[in-house]
Length: 431
Image (tube, rainbow, N blue to C red; front, side, top):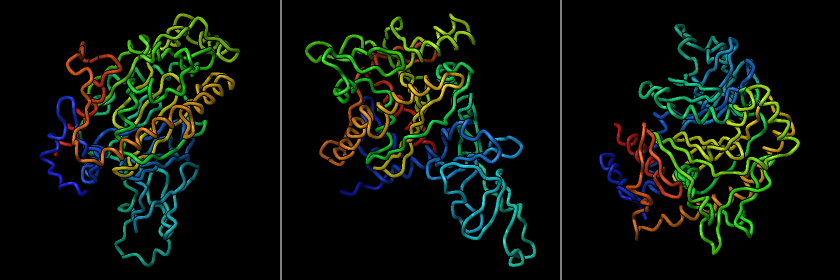
């Protein structure tokens, strides 16, 4: 049935303590408002600098409903341009990635440099006498922020600064990048891309949801309740299920953390570091220790973070390492891009091991990701029913512990989801 028209002044009433209205997932009018007020204003992850190493390199992506090009210009600067020809409006670049010295629109041949400057207009005698090419350069995204190769952009001219937005989450990026012996990572090992028939927030919630794992991913757990190994060199994974089908104590002790702006992360469980060994891992550990010292290498390799969410569109998996980008396409259609992370300075064997394990867990036809996509699809179908308008997110409500600006709670609770919707409400209610 049709939803009643949305009154933007009443958006806040869709979020209550411990519950949210199902319309936040199903109403196209709310989705349109998200594209304007959330994705049109927030700091969004664009890509990684390793994707545009040389002048002329580019990738294309979307920030909300805006197609963009991230390029490396001749002077080495990083540019994020609106991928829309200033003549008649087509996307100038259609490929996902590549290398070009100039960007030419297929429709009428208008040609721009990699910083968006209009260079040539075919048949210029057709232009008005006062035609000025400087007025027809490609538009640039108003604000760009970078941290250790991670590139973010905001479509808003003003608002929260990048440093205010990224804040405490720098440590989570450090946790990943510091694992590379040369202190940098690369997104050059391919990409998994898939779509699901569900709202984008279902994937965002799921990133930090530890409650679902023993049930949604039951097929990944052995008879003794242990999940398969997900890191190079591990003999086995985490204890997830105890006798009688109960959630294992080790899993229940995991913690979730939030720091405002919708950001959050979950801690990892204790893994048996003493038994982590393989020829590839042993060599990698030795190389890392030679660069940073044995003590620091051990600190880096001791698992601390399982998943990180930098709200609203990017997550970092700390276990079998990868970066996941969430792209809303419609109220009930979402695209997800997953990039394996190559640790620069690690051996090919170590990086291959990481990518192989990612293929097992988070490819479109993998053991883990397929379970989640089925859950999202079923949720979107179930949420069409208006006989019960509310979705419960009350687990652990009131049990949050806060210190030094960081709130924490058991990861099987739903504090992180409530924090996401607090940020959602802030964006959506800002006129």
